[in-house]
Length: 374
Image (cartoon, rainbow, N blue to C red; front, side):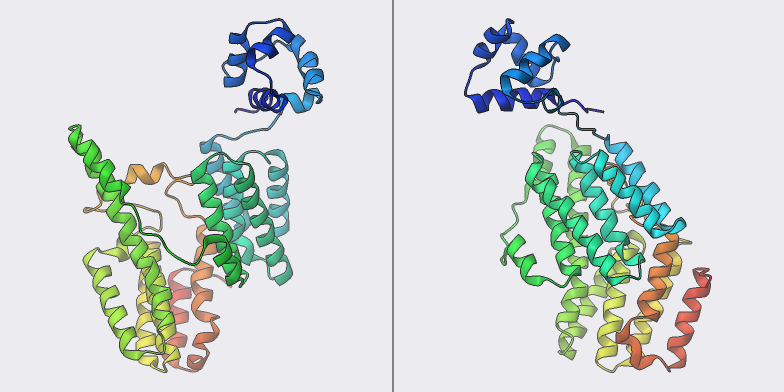
């Protein structure tokens, strides 16, 4: 755990004073090479130099040492999943209190702050207090803002921006989303293809194959992920809805997405059921809900909600393992099951079908198959 960041403080303070490494070395009475090693983190100053350095930079020794606890990626992953489990087993406020204590201790561990923010997004709805939900999302955004302001990791900052935008959407603040992300989309530069070709030229066909599979998988899932919102936006156009869903269902069948990525398939069926219900087409809405129930059930018996490849995408499991949270789901299994049930039993869009026997049977069936106790 890299908790002592004195190298960064020495380098920053030296530059603030506008002096060279040679000048600092001369003041301390050491070589320029020693200062260089301090600033690159290859070695630490002798403890007897700390008061002299702190005095020279006009800061305290605590500030000079810059004690900022850091957590290794594997520990962050384990902590996230432990806390996710805790949300399903312990009182909500108790888990939140533990999260806040962790934040205080690791306030400069930016990868952890991102993951705690994501944890808050995925579990804020477990409290029935609306004000508390908003407060938790605001806390998450504060964590994401800190990462953006303080972290030097470009990919980490980009991730923080995306999740801050997610919070704004949940809080029904679309203008803030556009202000944060901009209102236009730039064309993608196909870096993955270039990387794959480079590996191919080097004779590493295995790595080239892996990169191409990752690229195809990402584009496929991104396409499917866009469909639910796309079909809802076009809900008033009956013909357009049919075109969108027909292509979506073909895509799901061709790439066997019900088993490859059940969660994405669920979102498509769920959106389709909502749109058909809005159009007054209860028959098709119920058909989509039956598909939804079938995938929900299979996700906990035959298939898995964990990220995984298949016989076509047979080189991407190692890539999933490198994710900050690994391939596991971001919420506890029991919480996911209850969310699946609530999504169809408590959605006001389905209220017009509340007295339809088949709709009631679907809810009862899902509750039974997922073994959800009252």
